[in-house]
Image (cartoon, rainbow, N blue to C red; front, side):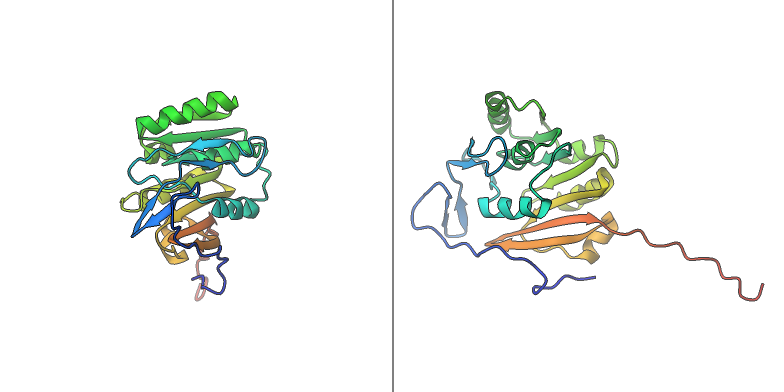
Length: 228
């Protein structure tokens, strides 16, 4: 099944800024990251997360996070979540802010990991489990079916989308969700090999964001008794 533009919920298109602001600006085809982002909901609302000027770092925009957590219903009390390719960690911290019981956060860049740990201490966010390492490896290490929510935002130029989706399809619980940011839309036919399908979709500027769920398993074909 394909989803169409008419079925997709789109966030407002962004316009390039003329100067560097807290929301960042676009220079040619490159986006200058903001100096900080803020948690937009829950117990840590308005807490600031620093955004280091690191290669490929793209914090999820406020309006996209707002849409995502509206889709999820805001209250994540008791959920187990994992945020790989975490960057600023804003998605993982947003989940923790909304009541998640356990949030695994994984990032390879040591500078960003140090900032994540410093913020965790500042907020006393003991439900976060922060580690430096391979995000796909973490997805594969965690117990199958154990997560209610997986955040995926791989580097756009990487070849990590398919292995991440494959691991997430096995990791997420039957009633859970996988959030995917990508430079293009992903359709159900592409997601089917990973056991996933599109539940909600939106677009904001160059960001295509998806909320994925488990695809229904195919019913086994009954053996024919004709001629028996």
